Image (cartoon, rainbow, N blue to C red; front, top):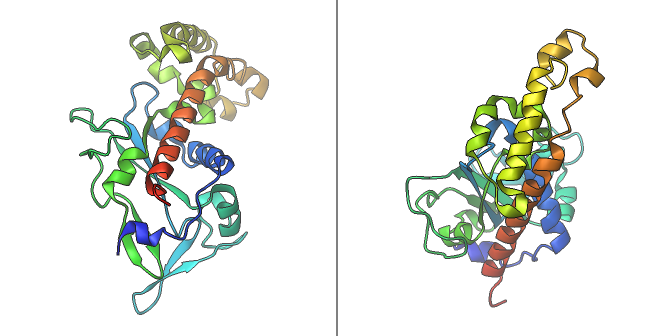
Length: 252
């Protein structure tokens, strides 16, 4: 059964649902740990899933059923968001992520030419009527965006930039995000926090009983420098979702 047959009855998510979903993705995992702060090394692909927001349960006979989750359910997934609330906020949007293959040619966004970093079986959806269906590569191609750890709110803290301080001078952001000047100002704040033992949040400081006011003195200073880049990546993610939706709803 084809992917498009599995999603034929799904409604197109509204712009508000798309915006909410981008915010959800930015907080869905501890990206400040798993993503790089500099050059993107992770790509995200967006698609529609008829089972979005549901948990799956395998019956004794091996068949699969969808489970609608509620507040407090042991099956609750998606950051604890119950099924109906998930569908109201995000529609049937879902995402997958994978490492970027920097050493291999990649398709331009929206080109539909195929990207070797997406495996043919990288994303799959399930519905009781159609079973397990693979999301076609062309859908992931047009709905792809590369993101960095900047998307997560906890990177507002100098604590997460300290390990990368020596590399900051080699990085640059697009001019719309402040370019190298923003990186330079960010580096100055990070260096100041490194020289101030009470300036940057650290779990060790918490254990030593250092007051929060001292630990957080520079913790939010970097927000003004990284906010434009975070918003740029938010716009890119939104555009990727809209490209995917245009693609799968073409001709309807």
